[in-house]
Length: 303
Image (tube, rainbow, N blue to C red; front, top):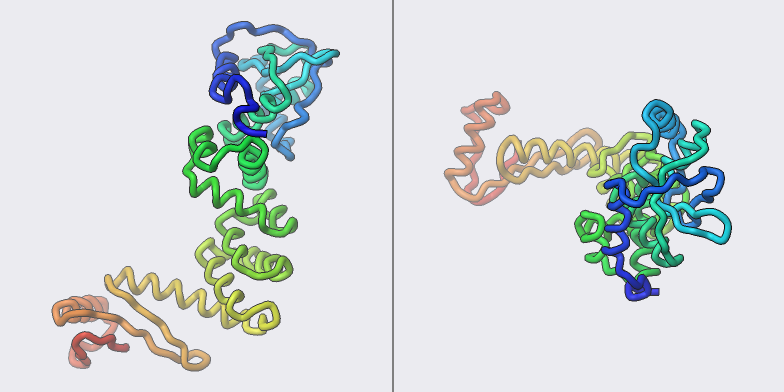
């Protein structure tokens, strides 16, 4: 299936949905005559948010019509499943709807893009939706980017989440891990190692940057060399200190641990003037005694 298989073109189909906002050609359809969308990309519906929407509908009615297509008996939902479900909760007999004549392929594409544009999918649902548009409808990542208003790298990075094991995808889906925490795990060679690293990241509430460092360290050690987890955590902490010192001093700073609890801090400079600036900064913060300067032009010095 490719984009030409959509017939009228996705832009035309989506503009048909936008007409629902204008109130044109809206029909009251019996809620009991509507069946859910078979191609719905959303897998989970937050019960609390559905309850909130139901309360709003009970007070004000359905303000934006849903979109349906005709079937032999009744209608099939195209867009607006949350409104449809909330209306069922309230017990509405009829719901305002815009009736469209869509093929299966058109309906699938519209359902995917409509959900993506509304940003109401979790990251894994979003990834599946992007992949379906690419694999089933022949869209390029750039095509998807333009349709949903996201950058091409964002589309590519989101789809990459589907290469993670099911357990890690579930963490991301539930919000236990963020995509930024999960994506670094892709560099690890096995699903088992990725799952173990995910557990470590969640246990210690690592940031995305810390997750990257952990994945880098575990990737070096390999699946049979995980005894040095504590050392990996120390290195992650050291990297954070390096970043803070580099920002403070305005130059590259490196920490090297020689043995447990001992090591060196190296501060780089590339001219006498830069060395004077760095020393002045350190003296001003009371980090070293002004009488104890060690100058080595063009090299790093240690404190």
